[in-house]
Length: 523
Image (cartoon, rainbow, N blue to C red):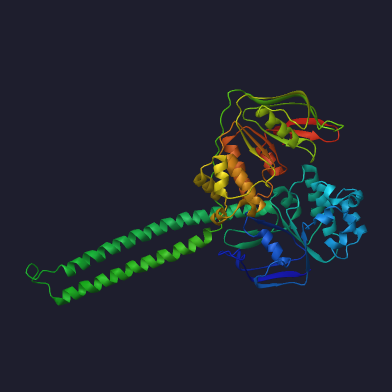
């Protein structure tokens, strides 16, 4: 076991006025399974890149360990090659048999090593890179969002795989994954960094207790401040009254007053003024002390949604619906029956490539009054007339240009849109950038904010939470539970689905069948 000692770490991107890290110090052990948690844009990936040696920094990081980073950067040339041909380029000294051994633990056949890497699915690519990552000794592994774009089954496999490993930092916003895989938590709070033993749930429970205690202490403190203010105001009035009697002295009306009396009044006034200043200093010290304790409290703003009530109970229905892509031998969707009723939040679950996104796209085509041009439909797929839909695409690659241009294109009020992004904890400095320079998490927040501002009968969200931080996920959960909009969703976050879904439709890739069940049936 070795240690990683971080001392007085300070880092700022070139051209930026704000430090990502400022005088940060902590120590971690290299045999820990460390979960790394924090808001989008707070520096999680940046810290991993600092450890990897990609950025220059101020301060000191001392360790004897060697770092390796996931995901590997795959070149265009490597995408055209089989993974077996460039294993050593990803991890020097990596032996093919070790990779095959790790792939077996990931319940994956070694044959994927001998297919062009670019033809592999997201899940297969992830498994290859994880197998390479762990196919070595004495490395401390930096793992950044390994479950993004993975379906439910692949996530479960990766979860079990990582649970048996140690010696890594895992950046993830998947609460279920963190609870299963980690034994320590490294948290980037708003103004501080903390390390705690346990998993995400234990850390969150402790944080809620701490925040509640600090809030109660703050309320007590505010009462004390009020008492001090009233005492200071009273002393100030007394001081002013005495000062007025001194200055307003009239010898004709008050012949009995002499210079010694005036001196006495002056001394008394000075004493009272000193007392007022003492009260003020005491109040300021206490305010600063309490504010220092409250800076890390997560107090998310309640978001708003504008669902519109549809005039009929059923918004979307399918009867014996089958869809086959042009030139495909088998149907992508085969004999689907379902109804999406007003107030329901239906999750589509299943392996990547089973037809979830295909169904969503076909529903959107029918709402526009069109039929899919890339395949043949059989049976019935019906959408209500006059439906207004708010849609989140899983792809963010189309986001380019400024926030102003985006709002103009979508007819959104720019000031309200930026205010909503701020409520999603996006820094104002980001608003000056073009969206292509945003992080993936920031791009997702743009799409979420746009959807939330759009009044709609039906909200269709296709993997909306990829790259979204855990605090924002909880924020969105509370929003959806409060407003209960009609929704059709694809997302692989188990915790999110368990809280939000009213019904689940599970796609079977092998049998081309569908399983319907209400959430109460399984919980």
